[in-house]
Length: 247
Image (cartoon, rainbow, N blue to C red; front, side, top):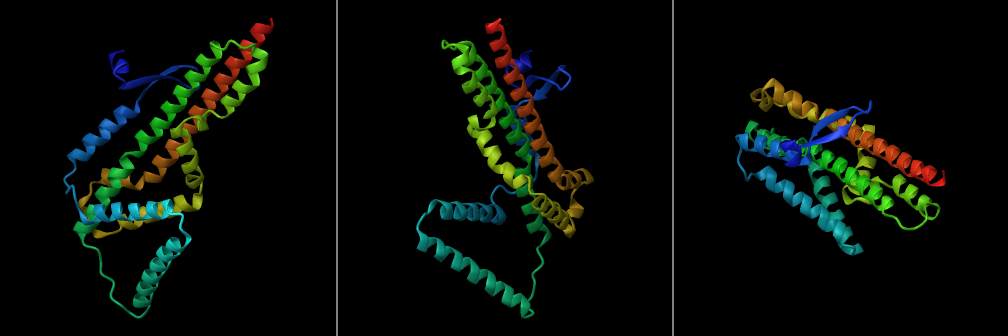
């Protein structure tokens, strides 16, 4: 009970209506933080800074609605990529990434991947919170049930989009449902592990890295299962309340 009060564990209802205990997003974030602190790596590195610069550049382009500026950015990217392609096509040297460089990139990726379970759990918690709010609002509703029934049933159907976390997940879901994209991700992960640096990783670390796609699929399934279960119980509660009122 103390762990639940301190938000380390949360009680949920399983598919068979049995009680289950699960780690909260706060717990998963704490575990991820401890894991990251235990890793032996530099806090500031070339790959980390490049990742930040690339992300900032991407969102700066999204934020800028000026047509000419977007065209200028695209032209610069095309010119850079074309020059590199022409160099390689002309027999230019391909510099192999060093073990240190690859290990640094691996640590940066692991830091991001380790945040995914907490992100998925946060969506589940947000949807659960909205589920409770809708039930409480419905119970405290002063208007006749017949007038508000459709309104609350609509809220039930829109349970996921009622929170910022849910809307973010729905946006990501369109991307994550792309089997071709996930297959490419799986192949890219395997390519990274095919570099000699991976010999320094333990079998468990290699397996964890290789299992990123499975981690993503499991997170998606958990969120969608929770949404379906909550939507069903919410609809049952509202409809049963309506029948009781009519009796």
